[in-house]
Amino acid sequence: MQLVLEERGSKKRAMRGFTLAEVSEHNNSKDCWLVVGGKVYDVTKFLDDHPGGDDILISATGKDATEDFVDVGHSPSAKAKMEEYLVGEIDASTIPSKKAYAPPEQPHYNQDKTSEFIVKLLLFLVPLVILGLAVGLRLYAKSEA
Image (cartoon, rainbow, N blue to C red; front, side):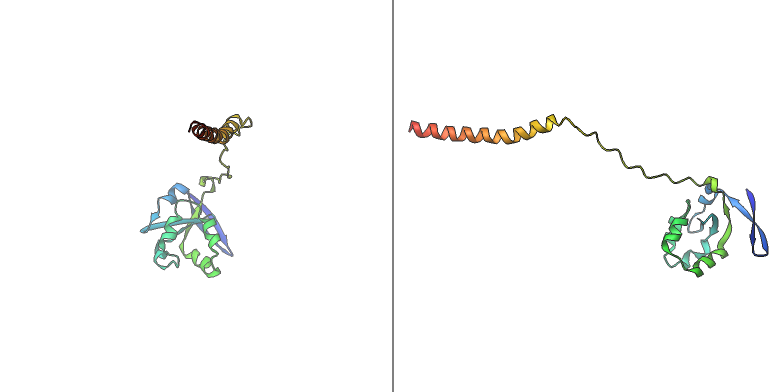
């Protein structure tokens, strides 16, 4: 546990610092904490009043929900209301860094294409051979009759 001194205008107050593991323990409808903008909020009392429903808030627990919060585009009054639920700050070193997107590996490209060529050739030649045999048998049968 660490204490962080926060200055707001002429007011100073000590705020507790939390790790992400500590905040992650508060992840249900009876005890719900969120991390937004480097600060920790206990939104348990707000769950029933949240316009998007409590499921949205509960699903944002255990991670840095800043991006989720910003993407929704909350009003200035919603941002101001958050101060009522502030319980401390998050230790930024406990939040895992985001990994850059790495596309899946592509299968090895066959530059030789030998097997593809043989398959295409057989797909062309086999029907021709069957057609030739059918015509040959037909002509043979006519000449015997």
